[in-house]
Figure 1 (cartoon, rainbow, N blue to C red):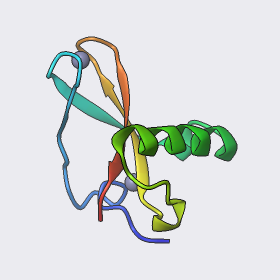
Figure 2: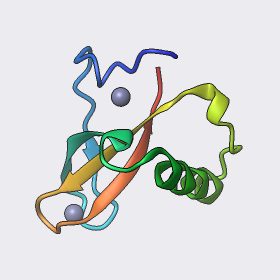
Figure 3: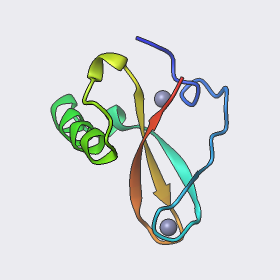
Length: 80
Ligand SMILES: [Zn+2]
Ligand SMILES: [Zn+2]
């Protein structure tokens, strides 16, 4: 499994909120919040919506981001 730079603290990626444009806070890996099955279901849908091929073999790390301004949550794929 590849190493995610966010999980390892190598980078302070700053994501912006789709809804209000505010800064999103990294809440950690999605797999820490959901069981594997539901996480993969969400990730599949996310990838389809974004037009990415649904290829979990890439082992991309999916993080949950939270906007404290408008209380929305977003899933983001973290690239190596
Ligand atoms: Zn990660
Ligand atoms: Zn927001």
